[in-house]
Image (cartoon, rainbow, N blue to C red; front, side, top):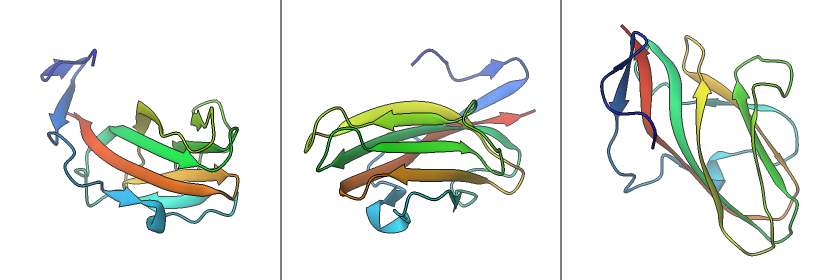
Length: 128
């Protein structure tokens, strides 16, 4: 990881440690190709500006896609996307995502054959 614990441009990184239990899994997501809201406020503090996320997904098919973006952002420019490259193979990504003041983000899963989704908050940046 390229960020170190400490201050970065008046932001402070708070690590949640190693992910031993995933914060959200496949049963916590609606998988109907529409955008939905994920409330992560119980995993971060109210002054969080960026969440550090680890995402692992597996689908029956190649080409399925998972999108995450800031809540109420209408577009893909700030979205993070993870696409399955091969069926039945676990794919993963770490990314940073801006959160709103209520600790919400939006997500969308394209495809209907998801076998596994593991979503964890590894840490977050707070404004000092």
